[in-house]
Image (cartoon, rainbow, N blue to C red; front, side, top):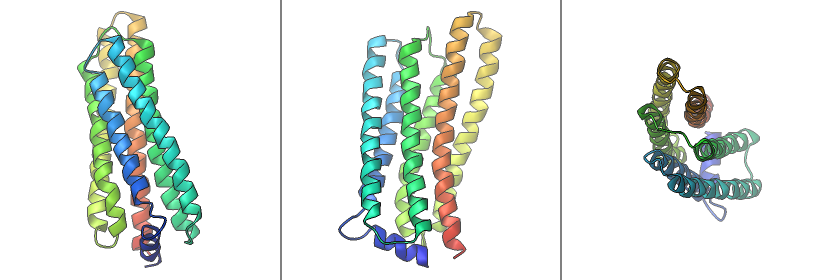
Length: 218
């Protein structure tokens, strides 16, 4: 019950951190949705616009993380709970960083084509982001929603596994079908970044799951 009391204390009163987490999730969704839109075109100018939008989200995310740490320092709570929440916030910020890197790579590489498999990976990144946005508000009702939180974490994990399968199939595809070594390298590197983005979002869900397990065993 100590964790539950600490959470209620943390997200109630003068220094309410709920908006920080909600805004992080919104930025993650905006970035991932923009990445999907970026892969729907071969226009370098549109790539540039999308990349700037994603970079702006990442910059806002950095500011949010700084604000989170400052507000958290004003709260009196157990070090374990402070660490758990900080880890979740930092993992969300890391996900924004990876999506930014993926978008920047598209702009730099300027691939000759965007294969459907890359679009599928981008869509999985977006789906994971939206699942995390649904997941995070449940933390403030951890006692009542422990099972729902676990199921939502499972959902993110399933999407990450689907991304792993899609990535492996795509790597096999380009090594078999793509004759231009330079283009093949571009596609391989992009796929690796996209797969890394799905991994980073699964890590957020894993951090949430660990926090719930600690709560249940208190």
